[in-house]
Amino acid sequence: MADEFARYMKLQRKIDKCLQEIKTEGDPRQQNVAYVKLGVKIAIYVLHGITMLSLVLMYRSTPLLMLPPEWFSPFNKIVAIPTGEPGGIGIGCWIVVCNTVVYRAIRLSPLLNR
Image 1 (cartoon, rainbow, N blue to C red):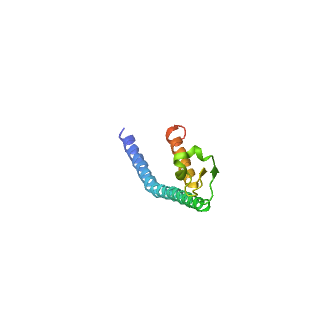
Image 2 (image 1 turned 90 degrees about the vertical axis):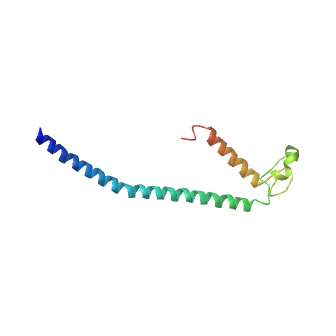
C-alpha cells in the first residue's frame, strides 16, 4: 500500500506540474487571441463609420426617395434633412430609421441574440 501511495503522489506531482505549465503557456495565447478579436472589432467599427460618413457626404444633396409631401406634412423638413426638398427622404433620416429597425430586431429577436 505504501509503495502505491508514493508512486501515486509522484505521478500526481508530475501531472500538476504539467497542468501548471499548460496554464502559463496558454495565457499568452489567449491574450493574443483577445487582442486579435479586439483589433478586428475596432477595424469593423472604423470601417462602418467611414462608410456612413462617405454616404452622408455623397448623398447629402439628393433625396434617396421621393414620396408625396402630404405623407409627412408636419415633419417635411425633418425627414428631408439634409436635402430640404419636400417629400424627399434624406440620407440622415434613412440611416436613423435603418439603425433603429436593426437595433429593435436584434433586441427583440431571441434567435439573433445567440
